[in-house]
Image 1 (cartoon, helix red, strand yellow):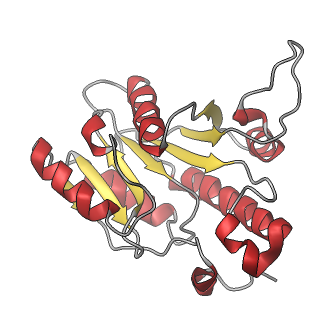
Image 2 (image 1 turned 30 degrees about the horizontal axis):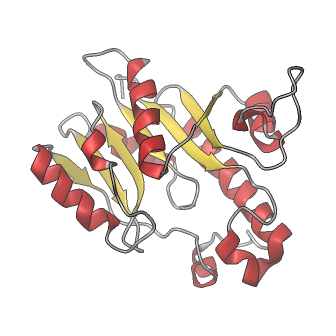
Image 3 (image 1 turned 60 degrees about the horizontal axis):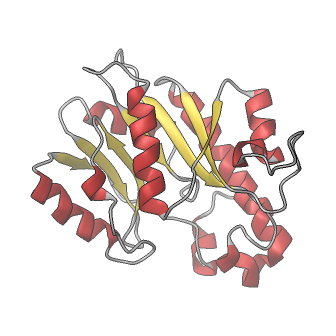
Length: 222
């Protein structure tokens, strides 16, 4: 693919007791955080392996951050899990900032699209919860944006694991009730209302609750 496509991986810092909280009953707080970090590392490495363009890791605020020289907490990007990835691989770090998930997603798209050539800008935004969202899926999603305004990888739980855009589309993210089985359905309605042509790739499984652990790659919990 010749047209560059920026990939933004949105992630929550893998802090025990605050990451993957719905999995704590099955894995314990430390085990859930360890899985969150493994999912994070996998998502970033797959984004790099896709070789589509720049990769950005956009972090949510960490708990108990280390102090800076100015006596204030640092941005989420300096959480050790994020720092390790930035030290090891050619990625940039950014902060999600305040607001609900929709506000943070829209802000990430505006920033990332602003860094791309205006006529050919393409941005894919993913989370870290779907381990089957690999480099090949990312390439297919980027290719879909050659003909569509938006591309989605739905999740089996009713949400979506990836959204890609060629230009900002704030109405897709405003006042959405997130983490519900109707997110993708409501998004389809908003796409139609905005006159946006979109493509959907086959749905994938998110790893959110204990029953989802069956969809992890073999050996991930060993």
